[in-house]
Amino acid sequence: MVERLKHYNSGAVLKLREDDLLIARYFPVEPGVHQVKIILGREGRCEWARYSIRSDRPGEFKHQWYLIDQEGLEELQSSLFDLAELGQQIDFYGKDFRFEDYEESQRRALRFWHKDQEVGYGLPNSDFFRHFKIEMQVATGFASAFERVWTRLSSAGMEEGIWGHA
Image 1 (cartoon, rainbow, N blue to C red):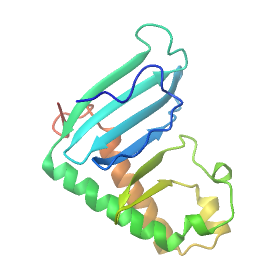
Image 2 (image 1 turned 180 degrees about the vertical axis):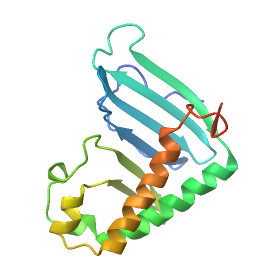
Image 3 (image 1 turned 90 degrees about the vertical axis):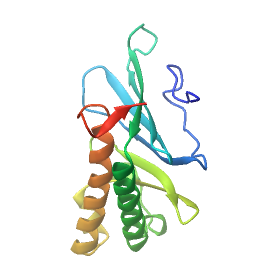
Image 4 (image 1 turned 120 degrees about the vertical axis):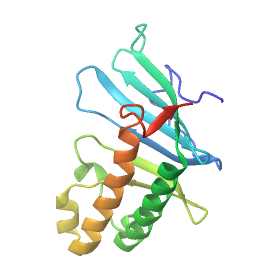
């Protein structure tokens, strides 16, 4: 296993590799924590890192490896497919807007492969869907698919039985 998340690369934009299933990042509303990054490989290996605001201090950078089970991996792949299909209906890339104007407080973001294309999505707040007159069914479906992916990722290592140590 090659470690890609290191204590000094909190600001780096990670390149999505062919053997990656997804790369995720978010900025938790938690004192002292700057961001969390997750890289999940197609085979189910998950690299997780939490960067503190003072990453130069010993113990302020947390790094772990996990292994997701086959069932969980299939659930994630299905949710990512749904997310990308709904994202295409919304056509984020065809709209003229600054995502910063609509992003949620934790600024969660996902990048992954869909039909051999790299796609990336964040979960916009409800103002975005209203402003661009996105059908409620599509907006709700997109948010639901995003949350299904995120629920699986955010529980990495925290709920016994969902992820096991690699």
